[in-house]
Each structure stands twice: as structure tokens, then as C-alpha cells.
Length: 178
Figure (cartoon, helix red, strand yellow):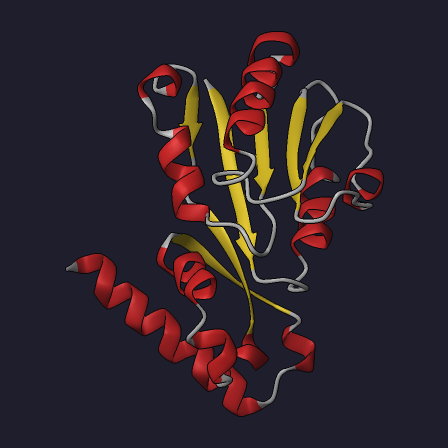
């Protein structure tokens, strides 16, 4: 089965940088794939992620689960059939709906093919106290699907930002237990 990781987070949180770090950990004998979604028509992320033994495929224009649902499924199927990676990373746009992407990955045709790992949700701790982020529907959806929270850009955070992140973790831990 293909180990499948969705990496989500709001615009500018550092998803591509985190993905670059993960790709540097790839063992030489393994084949990995990355499926990127850029909201605009062109994106530079694919160039930034070029790496030996890693197939990088980009789907521009619109959310993977909305405007680009069919191209996403076609591209995913091509990666599965022709590339046969051991590990697949999916990085939706910061404006994407990660819950819908997870639903697509859990469809019957993928149950015996994809092993979906906990969603990595990157959070800029400085945004946690700003209403325009916390109240944004997409931001809420990203937090709701998190299997693992990653506090990115923590070197820029203040002590109150760290406290906000700890509260977030406690809220989601309580939510997952119920």
C-alpha cells in the first residue's frame, strides 16, 4: 500500500518548506511522489521540490476537491498506476478543503491501495489570536482534520502565541477523545 500523507495549512505557513525537509529524509532506494495543488495557474513549488527519486506532479487552478476534482483523481490514478511510489505526499493549496480531499482518498477504489496517514496541519502560532484566521471556514477545516499539528515559524512567535497553541492542542485532544 502507498503510504499517503496530506500536508495542509493556511497560505504562507510553510507547507512547501516542510515538504522539502521531509523529502531530504527519503532513503535512496525508495520512490516517492508529491501531488501539489496551486490555486493560481502557475506555481513554483514543483521546482522547489525537485529531488532524485521523487516524482512531482502539479495540478494548477482551483481546489483539488472542487474545481480540480476530476484532474486530481486522474492525476492520482496515473501516479498510482505508472509511478507506483512507496510514499505519496499531497499538498493542497492553502485555500483548499482538506476534509474533502480526505473523503476522496477514502473512496472504495483506493481502500486497498492507499494507506492514509494522519494529516499534518501546519499552524503559524501568530495567527491563532487573529479572528480573520480563526474564524475562516478553510482554517477551521484544516484544524478539524489535523492528526498532527506542527507549529511552524515558532521562532517568530511570542509567549502568548505559544500559550494559544497549547490551548488549541488541548481543545483538539479533548475533541478527539469524545
